[in-house]
Image 1 (cartoon, rainbow, N blue to C red):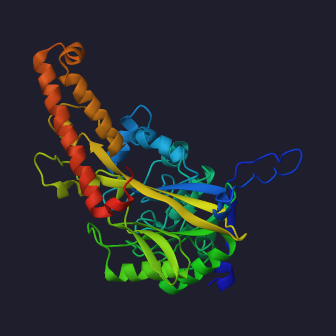
Image 2 (image 1 turned 90 degrees about the vertical axis):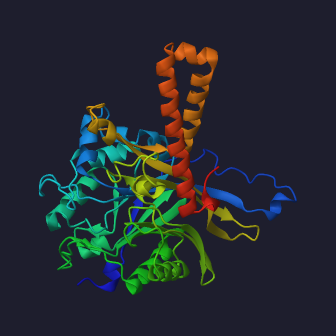
Image 3 (image 1 turned 30 degrees about the vertical axis):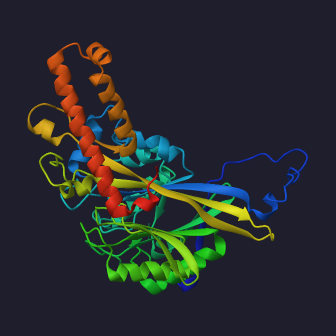
Length: 424
């Protein structure tokens, strides 16, 4: 077993864009009015966006293979969001081990070799690899997955080629702000943690986790903890998970990002031990083939919960207070609802030949659909777009049903995650 010092060793990964110092030294301090002298000065900001589970169901892989743009086409609506952030995080709920593993099957996943490159090209930077599917392709699958992620410069959190590597504190630096990442899983479908010298996936044990958070705070401005936990398909965290969340916030964590239930759970501001942190108990699925048969006009709203997701945004701001103290605060915080579209029903009826699964931003889709409805319902514009009256009426009914679905999902997400953090 590695020593405690080795287990908590720090890996610094600098992703800071290189800059050229000004030729005449640093710029002079700007003039500050009597009012502004009482306000903090922002020295640097890091913007983070996080989403939930990347599930590699067979239909998801086939949809990517049939899409002209491959995997990025499945979440094309989100690519500007990911690329616009300094750090984009998700839970990678699959090995990527085509060489050492077997083809994926239900409850035992494996992803194609193209996935890591597609994630990097889409703007992802940090992936949790500590989850119950980490050992789906054995220890060799863990090792191959990590190698393929390294090749694409993707940071894996919570697993490693050895126990020491799995327990390293990853620190990213952007815009002068240093963020530490830690990853843990509460569950294993197959636990192959045997020797510290072999591939390892970090379990969630509270005391070691608290020690790691305390160590991370020594070298970072803020600490983000990835947690694979919670009851599947439950919208509420358990009493134990609330207690763990409070302990981690009190111990120094600023943001807890939860995943595993495959449905959304609340986002909450937690105050404990004189500290304040944000806890995202579960961000739900990012992409999957679950609830593929759901239709808002045929099923209760809860029947589509596995297709709901959320993109969570926050800004870590490094500020200098009027007394000269420098600290990092969690500034802007919010989320927007996501929805996974799936044409399973159209394919089942023979109305579509290719599999189409894609994640959309609900608010933008609502605005777009309303505009399209206005145009179709306008006597002149509608007739110009669709001269055939019967076809236009059918298109209007379809758009109205689609809009109803989006509005139902938006309300459903707000009722679970909490409306306070929803971006307007």
